[in-house]
Image (cartoon, rainbow, N blue to C red):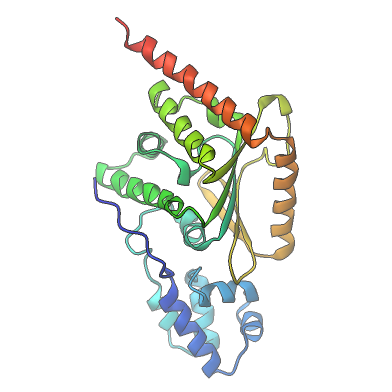
Amino acid sequence: MKAWPSRTTRSPGCGTGEELRRRREAAGLTQEELSQRVVMSRTHIAHIEAGRRRPDVEDARRLDQVLGTDGFFERFLPTLDGKKVAEHFKGALEFEGQATEIRVYAPKLAPGILQTPAYALEVLSSGASPKSPEERDELLTTRLERGRILDNFQSPKVWALLDEAVLRRPIGGPAVMCEQLRHIAILGESHRIRVHVLPFSVGYHALLEGFVSLMWFEDLPPVAYTEGLKSGRIWELSSVVRECQVAYDHALGDALSHRQSLALIRAVAEDFEHEAERAQRP
């Protein structure tokens, strides 16, 4: 498998952002004025200029039309620096790498930034769409590199709200699950992340319908990312982001405390360890 590239503080879309700011200012437009003409939010424009987001094809075409740039932004659309991810996750990946705080809710699988190599490999190897070994390795490299944002102990702050199903579903078998749960527990016990488990006994809760990631930044408004089957969406409208934050807070109120959650995670990991040992006996 390929070696992990080192993390960089350079924003992945900075070239596009610098050029957009230059062209916008040359046209004598504020971010708000440009946003109205291209039918995009001012926050969206600000994120592109800050290098935290790339315009999609339709965005680029509207920018070219309004700014009279003769197709420049459509031609300039960069790749994700060789990083292989699902199409619907590209925007969220860029935000994730620049966030100062991330609060994620995971209903079924361990969040990507917390996955161990064996767990991630099982997730990426399964599913209805078969992948070649090369494609799988590219996806795995990106998945594991995402976890390196935790190498910096100070930033981003990470909260992981996990449904109990994340702990119980035996992805990859008992040995893989034991390693995965202990990895999460170690991160929690070292105070690198906060972990809260929503037990089955809670029943329905405010986030039961699906995955959500809330992200905050040093100098721009927060965003929310929600995901379903083969789909994902970034929300920048402040009212929608706030609704997601409120739902997260409500679900968090139903969860176990950080200490209780770590105890449960450790106990389930131990159960998986015993199961793995029994499976190895003749």
